[in-house]
Amino acid sequence: MGNRLSKIVTRTGDAGSTGLASGERVAKTHARVRCMGELDELNSQIGVLIAQALPARFAEALGVIQHRLFDIGGELALPGHIAIGDTHVAQLEAWVEDFNADLPPLKEFVLPGGNLPAAQAHLARAVARRGERALWTVHEETPLNPAALRYLNRLSDLLFIIARHLARADGGKEVTWRHA
Image (cartoon, rainbow, N blue to C red; front, top):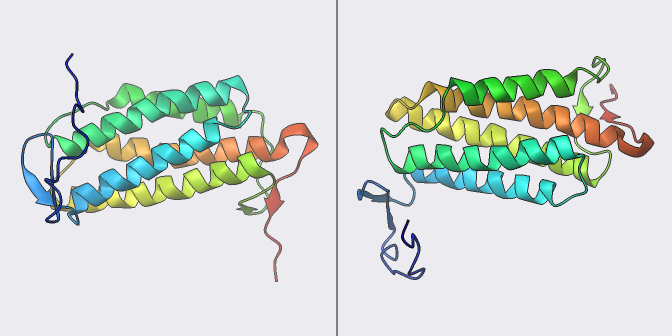
């Protein structure tokens, strides 16, 4: 494969448009471009989370997820391209079941926090939800791959479960909502 980014400064976006992988130019404010930005932010948040000292099973899952988020970005950049499938969604669901199996049932709402890694997982979860909403906005304009939509929905669930585990690490506790 040749160099994908041989020139970083192109000046082609200086007038407010950007190029999709299809060659089509769209406004930088286009819903598709905004959604790609949300997924880029999510991927960055997950990168920050991985930079923490995480249990291997979480770090490995999150590393795989970063690649899948890039795949969804590719689907957005090249309309009609499909990279995410039911097997990817099933992998997330398997992690959700596996990671959730040893957590106690929830009795109250969980607030973001507990420790830095848990708070970062909650932040990634919130960004995943925003990314999911952005993906649905694009889908309302132009139908997208349903598996990609399901993937982001499951991802926020997985990040919530990982945050619960991280808050409980080393004898810590989850922060729960106290009624007023």
